[in-house]
Each structure stands twice: as C-alpha cells, then as structure tokens.
Image (cartoon, rainbow over all chains, first blue to last red):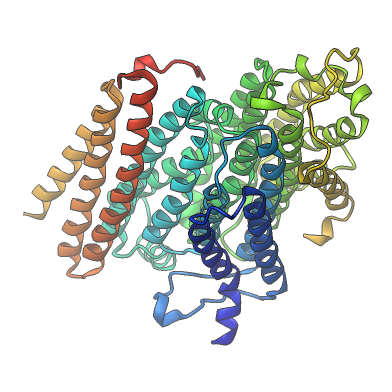
Length: 472
Length: 98
C-alpha cells in the first residue's frame, strides 16, 4: 500500500504543485522569476522521486480504488522521467525567454505543470476514457500556452487551428472508445486484449471501426502523415520554450500511451502493423520534403519533428506484444528530447525580442560572435541528424536494428534513406553559422539567465547518453 | 430498437464531420465538434443498455464534463479571435499557411 503511494508520488507532487502555483499566482508580490524557480523545483523534486522508484514488472497501484485503471511499469517510469526532465528544462528556458518578451504572467508556469500532470497520467493509464481525460488535461493546458501571447496575431491563429483540429481528433477518440466499448464490452486495455484473443478482431466491425478511430486520434496528436499539417503552423505560432515542450513532452506521452494500447493484445497489434508501416514511411518522407522547403528555423524544426515521429513509428512497428519492454522507443524519445529541448533553449535566448531572429540567415556567423552557443547548437543538430557519437545516432541505430530483428528490412532501409535526406537541412544551419561572416552582433541576447546553462547541460547530456547508452 | 439508437448516433457523428469540414465560421465548427461528442455519448449509453452494465452511463457523464471544459476554452479563443479581426470567418485567418 505504501509502495503504491510512493509510485504515484511524482504525479501527486506535480498536481499539488500545479494547483498551488495557480493559487500563489493570485498574489501580486510573487514575481514571474520566483514562479519559474518554483516550477523548476517542483519538476526537480518529482524527477528525483520518479528516479528513486524502482519497479520490476507491472504494478497496479490501488487496484480496488482505481479499478485497475493505472498500471505502472518500468516503461511508464522512464517515460515519466523524460516528461519531467522536459518540464524542468522548459521552465529553465522560459525564465530567460521572458526577460526579452514580456507577455508572461505567473500562471504560465502553473499551466506547464498542469500539462505535465496530464502527460504523466497518460503514460500510466490503461483504460480508454482515462486516456481521454488525461489527453484533455494535457491538451487544454497546451492550447492556452500556445496562445499565451494574446496580442500576437500569429499565436491567436495557431491556437485556433490547434484547438479546432485537436478537438476534432478528441471527438474521433471518444467515438472510437464508444465503439470499442460496444464491441469488446469494456474500455480497459487488458479486457479488450483478452476479448480480442478469445473472439478475434476482424469479425467484429465495431471493434475494427473503434480502434481505427482511436488510431486516427493518436496519429493526429503524434503528428504523423496524413495528420501532420497542423504541426508546422502551431509550432511556428507558439513561443520557443513552449514549442520545445510540445515537441518533446507531448510526443513522449502520446507514444507511451500508443505503445500501451497496441501491446494490449498481439492480434490487435499484428492487424495494425501493416498500416503503421505505410504511415511511418510516408511520415518520414513527407516530413523531409516539408523540412527542405522551410526558411525559418522553427518551421524546419517542426517539420523535422514529423520525420522523428516517422522513426518512432518504425520502433512501434517493431515492438512485440509478448514481453514488451519499449526500451528502443524510450531511448529514441530521450535522445530526441535532449536534442530538441536544447535547440529550443538556445533559440529562447538567441531569438531576441519578439523572436526577431527566425530564418537561417539571421544566424549567419553565430560561431564568430557566440562560439559556445554555436558549438552547442551544432551538437544538437548533429544529434538530430544521427551522426556519431551523439545520442541521436544511437537512437537511430537501435530503432533500425529493432526493425531488422522484427523482419522489417524494407522499413529499416527507408529509415536510413530518410536519415541521409535529413542531413540537408540540419547541415544548412551549421554551414550558415560557421562559414559566413557575422552580420548580426547578437548584443541584445542575454548571457545571464538559466537558458544558456540549460543549453550546455543538455549538450553534455546528448554526448553522455550517446556514449553510455546503458544509462537509460 | 438498439440499432435505431446507433443509427442516430452515427448520423449525428457524420453531420458533425461534415459541419467541421464544410463550415467556414469558427463558431459553427465548434458546435459541430460538440455534436460529434454527443454522438459518442449516445453510443456509450446505447451500448451500456445493450450490455446491461452501468459503465457506459458513467463514461458518458465524464465525456460531458470534459466537453464542457473544452467548450469553455473554445469560447475564450473565439472571443480572442473576434477581438483581433472583428469577424469569425476562417478565411480571414491566413497568416499561417502550412
């Protein structure tokens, strides 16, 4: 009983922290600076709590109270660690970002914590309606964060697009849950899995239609082809720290719940693998094509996020429902998270007032003016492109070997081709940073703040995770 | 009898999808999404009746609560958009082009 409590402790800390931050925001004495430190503290404590929980196998906390709706395993634990880390570094970059942009209020940090609460819940839930609730806790907070700059017209448009399409996907998810409930008599993953194992999958139209709808909703949230169009606009409209948070934390949570749903039963998984194959290939290549055509950095990173979703789908195709561990997915998510978070932390302090530095050209000659920042950005880009000895390389290596082990040779080949294509737009920024004369003096960028520190910690993490893959 | 309820539910869902795709007013689009959620609720209740369990009723209530939270945020966004442009036609919002 006490062990169950300890296992849920990170979630409790995050939720209590979010609520108290919201209440504290009512006092005018509290500055946004203090709020950001509180937010970091909450994430830090929850991270350490999560780290100290050791579990083997699946634990169902408070079986009778929660009616088996939550299951905690090593997979959910590590996914939770990644999410808490993302929240910590987002608060860090937001602290510096809001020295140059002043649309922040104290509630900003409360909302970051609330969305982390939804994400943590999402990694653990094993029941469709709980998934819906967790999804909405996370999404509602993220919608507000995207449109936080109320005077900015681009942000307002971004939140409109995201909210309309997100709610549309949410409606699909609910309908899917209703149909699965009709087909399988239950909304719990384990009961659905049992039902499918006993009665088959394709002879039950409600179940097929329902899982199709649920799959559509997941693919939408994970920004996979053909539901990727919103990503670029939304990432472009949101502020830099929030874009980084959405690209990493949100994706981790979605892939955790996606994997949990797929491995509910082997026949459920094997019936969808063939379709996921095509989704994954198209996601990678469409993402690459979009990324090559972009001129602004944020849109390029958004498009590269689509490509990374493609790689994660490869890893998802390769998992097996029997003795599922999800190590490959988690390693890739961690590698991608440190690279992307670092990139957006760097953009948070280099972007300047109102994020005026946007395009590749604006960062020309950064290496001459800010050599350390340029070096850190180079490490992140090389990691995303998958060049050794970075974390991104090991992540891609594990994904592709797992695809080969699962017999998906074609998928592995497509993954490698797409990885070569993606060099084009990552190297483009490196070239513009190192091989051009500096036109901008970057004088207005602050060096005193937490975002530069966060950037260098993350750059070190990229190399550490890459050199010692055992840690994860 | 159960089948007719399900037919109504699926019809409502399809009307919702058509509304989201074809309407150009932000407000109408959100209303169509609510329609889709209500279709799902009807399906939940129908299946609960079919299986003779209470689960579906509970789930429908929870979906309603979440939908209300979403509607609250959606209305706030509608007001924000109206402040910026003075109208709610989606064609007006064209700063971002995928």
